Image 1 (spheres, rainbow, N blue to C red):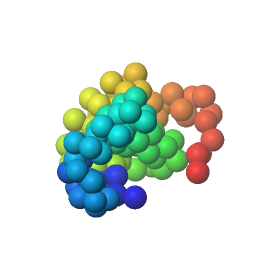
Image 2 (image 1 turned 180 degrees about the vertical axis):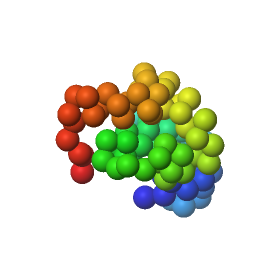
Image 3 (image 1 turned 135 degrees about the vertical axis):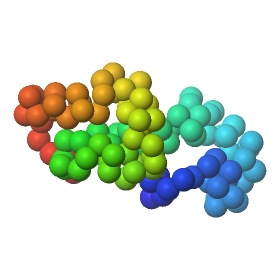
Image 4 (image 1 turned 90 degrees about the vertical axis):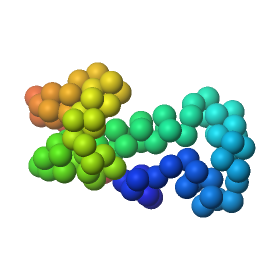
Length: 101
């Protein structure tokens, strides 16, 4: 629920009442990935949905998913999705993708 906020693994551990190292160990064992990687991928999935479903600017979408710096957001989005947010939006429009709930 708080993915759009500036959140740390320490914050998550404190919220659920576990030691940070123990939480990371459990998460990695269960998901085969880190909490940080999961959070980044989740944010990029939410951003991808916003790119298809809204007319928000890329800067506004970046801020909506927890990135104050749109350039950093675009760099990470491209690394995860294989194309820039602008290209992703254009490609989605060309393919006629329907909005996603």
